[in-house]
Amino acid sequence: QVQLVESGGGLVQAGDSLRLSCAASGRTFRNYAVAWFRQAPGKERELLSTIRWNDGSTGYADSVKGRFTISRDNAENTVLLQMNSLKPEDTAVYYCAADSVYTIPMNPHQEYAYWGQGTQVTVSS
Image (cartoon, rainbow, N blue to C red; front, top):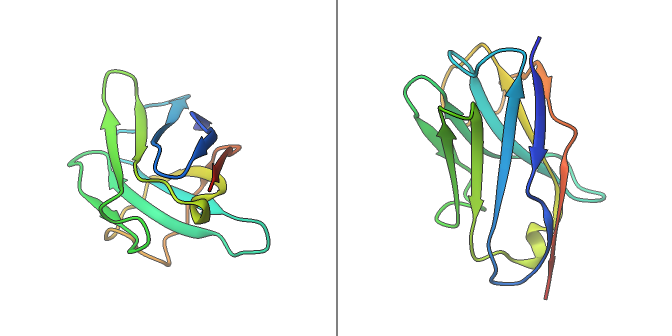
């Protein structure tokens, strides 16, 4: 069983940066795929970025490519999402998810067995 806890959300102004963390407990992220999603009120959940823990291969949605960076911290067993040049439309609850099955980056059909509770990101204009 893997427990995921997100942190790092908050209220920022447009153009600012935030770094989200997804910490795992119960086991390491080794051999896992980890993803960041977000969901804004009234909108569908959006897959933002994925990382394969073992080799660090990553993928990004077009909406965040060039602004967001996903990375891993082996020592802390944590996946990070560095978010730069934030826009009001980035306002949402951000979730991390993990699964032991990894196919290709940004696989829209990948199912994730483990989810965090979410962290709110609000970007004011």
